Image (tube, rainbow, N blue to C red; front, side):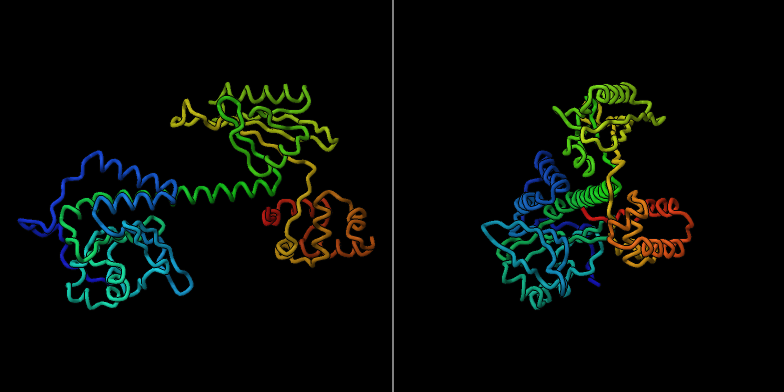
Length: 396
C-alpha cells in the first residue's frame, strides 16, 4: 500500500512558491471542461483533452492510464506530449510504481510519497521515468462507479520547477470533472451495449422495429427491420417516409401513424393498433403494429422518437444453433434437426423429406423428443421450441 505524507493542502503555504502562475481564468477553465466532456462522448478526444491539460500545467506528458499492463495484456495509456516526445507503448511496470495503491481521487506528487533520494533510487524512476525525461509527477487514481481505477498523471522534467500549490489546485479542480466524464463514458458505452443486445434479440425473433420522429420520418431501424425494408416486398422507405406498396394498405398505415403522432399522450395508455400489409411476392402478409412513444420533455422541438412501427415476418424461418438447442433440450443432433423443421411449420412427413430420412425414422425421433421434453403433442413441441432462448443464440 502506498504510504502518503500529510496532504499538502493541509499544510501552511510557503511564503514564496517554487513557481508562480497566473490564476486559471473562467474562460480557460470552461474550455478545459468542454474538452473533458467531449472526450466522454468520443474517447478519441482524450488525446486533445490531455494535450490542453499538459499545456495548462506546463508538463512534458499528461496521461490517462485506462488499463495497466499485465503479463497477458499490454494495457492502454492515452498520452499527450509536447515537442514530439513519445511514450513507450508497452508502458512501465506499474507493480513497482510508488503510486500503486493510492487512495482514490486524491491528487499527490512524488514528495507526498517518497523523499527525493528514495525517488532517485527507485527502479521505477531509473528504468522508466528518467529515460523519458520524467522527474516531477502529479498523480491521482480515479475510481469509477463500476469499480474501475484510472490513473491520471502529469509530469515535468528535472530541469523544470516542481508543481506549485497553484498547479495542484488546478489539478484538484479538474479531477472531479475527469471522474464524471469517465463515469459518463461508462454509462453511454453500457447503454449502447444493452441496446445492441436488445436489437440482436429482436432481430433473431424476426421482429422489425422502425422508429419515426415527430414528422413521421424514419430515424432508426433495427437489423430485422433493415432486412425487411431492403426486400421492398410490401414495405419500403420513400423520402424518409415508411410506405406500404399497395394503396389501400398504405392508407391504413399512414392513418395509424398519423393517429399516433396526433395523440402522443395516449402512449401512457399504450395506444397500439395493427394492420396487415400484403406482399407483392405472394408470401404471407406482414403483421404491422403501430405504437405511440411518450414524448421526452428534454427533446421537445428536436428530432425525437415519436412512433414505433413493429413488423413481424410471419413466414420467415429461423435457424437456432443446433448445439445450443441440443444443450437446452438434451436432444441428439438428428432429433434437434427434426425439432427445428417442425418449429418452422413443416409436417412430420415434410420434415423427413427435407432431412432425407425415412418416415419411420422421423417418427422414432419424434417419440424420443416427446420423452425428453415431456410433451405429448407436436403442437406443444413447436410451442416450447419457439418460446425457447435457443433462437437468440443465432449470429447475424
